[in-house]
Length: 213
Image (cartoon, rainbow, N blue to C red; front, side):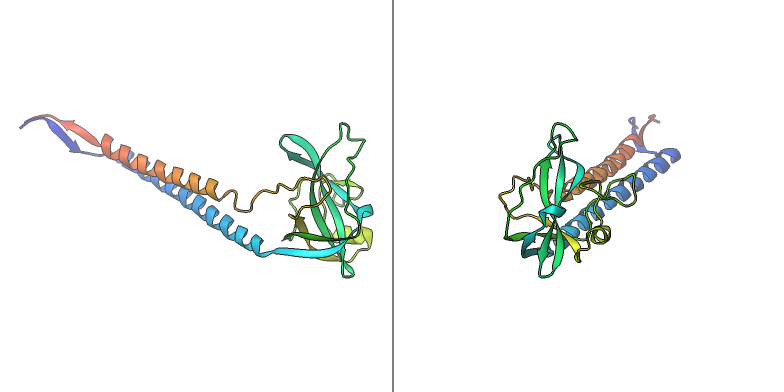
C-alpha cells in the first residue's frame, strides 16, 4: 500500500483551535451587534431633527474647550436661543483658538430672529473636569441644569446641534451618526475570517503522513 496521509488531530490542537474559533466568532458577533446598535442610534438621531425660530442671547455664550478639528485646537460655541419664553442651548459649531489662550476668538452672532435647524441631543460629550460645577466663559462641559441655575434661564431639556448654514464663520462638520457602522462591519468580517482561517489551518495541519505497510 502506498504512503499517504490520514486525519489524526492532536487533542491539544483541537482544544486550542476550538477555543480560538469560539473567541473569534464571539468578537465578530460583538462587532456585528455594535454595527446594528450604531445604525439604530443613527436612525433615532435622524428622527430628532427640528427647526426652531428664536433670538440668540450672545452675552451668555460659552466656549467648550479642547475641541480639535484637522489637528487645530479650538472651541465649540454654545449660545442660548430664546424660543417662545424658553431657551434652548444651541451648539452652533467650531471656532479656531487664538494664538494665545489669554485672547478668546471673536464669534459673530446673527442678530434678530433666526431659523436654526439641527438635531436634538440629550447631552453633549463630557470630558474630565477639575471642578464639579463649572462657570465662566470657557468650560470643559456644559450641564443644562447647572447653566439654568447660573443664568436664571428656563431651559428646554436638550441641546440643539446646529446643522443649518449661518453667516457666523463657524465650522459645522459634525461626524455622521452612522459613520462607524462600516468600521464595525469591517471588524466583524475580520474576526469571522480569523475563525475560518483557524479552522482551515487546524484541518490541514491535522493530516499526518502514515508509513506504507
